[in-house]
Length: 415
Image 1: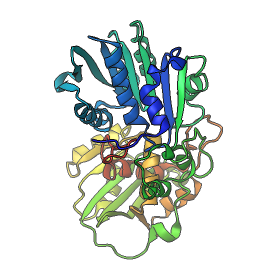
Image 2: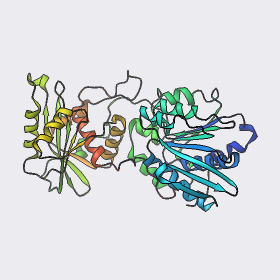
Image 3: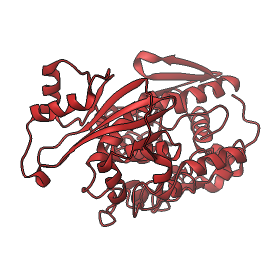
Image 4: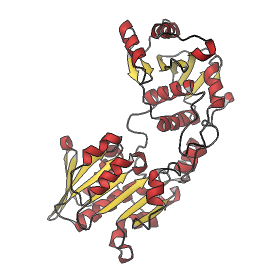
């Protein structure tokens, strides 16, 4: 990979540690828009600093998962290092690689900070430095454990992220307190990436709306407010004709006290159509249904179609067991990351990848009612009128998302 031109902020990210005026800083924080050029320039700067400052040191490069970290950060970084004369030796089974240049050799461990249990993975190691990519997506316990590992004299911390909500702990504790933490703070926009064309910038502007546009395109730490799916358009996203589909799946949000919502989806070309739905509220009807009664409705929804899989609310253990007992459908536990799921649905709506039959009245009703809880102090939708919205999230996260690749690396365009 070749970088033909760097912006001033990218150059600063690469070389800040060489400049006397920044010698007092223990850390660097880069945040801002997607595709703004911060990630590769920061990762290359991290390795350049490590190889200049240490020999025989241990370092950590952290992402939300090791798989996404390798794809989005490590593989492009290694390609760049080879072209610059570094020698990189990867130990895949042990999740580390060694970099050498002349007589200097340092080891870089890879860690995933996916959830609270991840903190134990990095505990105990002594580090000369750490680079946390997408730090705002990691739990605070993992980040603080990684920071605590940097006990070697001269060690530094490197943080990179896209904005979240302004109540996020990293924004409050690090970005707003950058001077107090002795951290150099650099904010990136898409204009700070010379490799990004005007056409690509326009494409990203079209992909997002609302709070996600403010964050990922404008690079602002913005609170979500109002309707969640402002891009939903009845004229664009509702259909009323017969569609000849080649694949079929069902998504399920299961409730006993709360409503249950099942959606039958069919694929035609590159689009998915919500063909039918089942929605049952025990509160509204005045009587609860059993697992077997809900299962009977699942079979009725499927009809004679060849259902590829049933994507089920992961907390619905008894209903999943019921489906397994009948041995007719293959089940998949849904990804229940709410905010990531909402962003994926936003993408699918903006790209017209999902459409809804006019008779799917319950999901259409919920689109108009589903909104952000502005009193919650973070990204939290109101927990009402959200059951068809949940089964929609489950479907999109399973069928329209390449796993661990929500923020992929494209060609020579730097993130």
